[in-house]
Length: 155
Image (cartoon, rainbow, N blue to C red):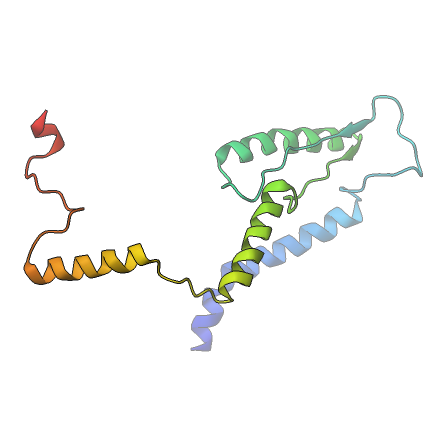
């Protein structure tokens, strides 16, 4: 059993060892070191990049990766040429959409508890009773299609 577990981690261990080795190499050569005010850069030797971060209320898509990759490649190019590069990047966790979502969650927890217990409205109860009666009577529910033709056939 241990042999199988060890075998399943071989690729992960190889990647982890490779990561640690490269990080040590980068640290040795100060690859990702950007000077602050200790050594002012010469004219034309600085590069600052900024990325309009996506809000957390949407989903990430390929366009985000495309835009970020152009900035990332540019920053790395300037760094390799010896420029003083500053590329602050992180996914942002604040802002109005996030604040509104957090406030809504707080109101719902206060109103319905945690985990929430939502009360059924009178309309939902009547709808549930009507569905139960229709099932007993054998009538098809109102939301089911009654026609047999497909959309293409009816055209």
